[in-house]
Image (cartoon, rainbow, N blue to C red; front, side, top):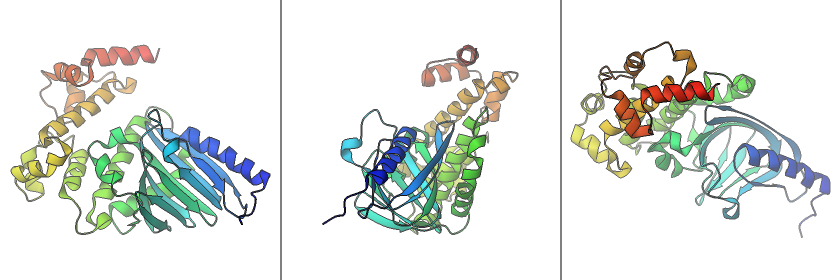
Length: 312
């Protein structure tokens, strides 16, 4: 027979539940079966659309059940790391126990459960699925799998997450959209390395991560990417068929996204449209406004005008 959970523990859990639900997505937080609950502390801030968080606590279960999932919730891919202690994550029929030597991914669009058996500090990034583009589906199918922190991208990502808590109060201002891009690129780099998933790592992930890191290079093209990875352009196109995209169209869309962002940045208002385009590898901006209108419904001039009006 389970021990009745003391009212004080339940109230503390409900307070934490409210904060977490407002910061991320609705969840249920329960004290453990013995009624223990270590007062949890939740800190978070946003960098652009990316949520950076630090959560401390223990003796608790966090449940994201199907009944709590709504079409109006944020769809976040969470990348988290235990900075201290250990905790468990379960999703999609998989379970893993995490220590400070591993990262884990889970998806808020589907049910998941987290268990904290001991005092623990967890830092993480909540990334909207839309920012991950075609990577979102791949990461969402690698949930609840411990990703060892070895070298390269994984170690760098872990170091960033460990230091995120001390920088939460600084995440504001004009740099945040750029910081969000950098955080997403870092995560993709960490998750695309061979050591993240073993020898079966899909080349498509590494190709797209490479392209994100080289968008500003005017010579970035399917041919150049194919040569860099030792494959043919035909093979690249075959790899990307499951995504429903062509590499050339994907590179073009990502460049236009960066150009739109910079055109809306008041700090870059002195730069001409042509120079902004050149920053992202488009040296001939003759048809840029038409391309932006087709992609986002606004020309270059309209993007800048809208940004001026929104900032008053």
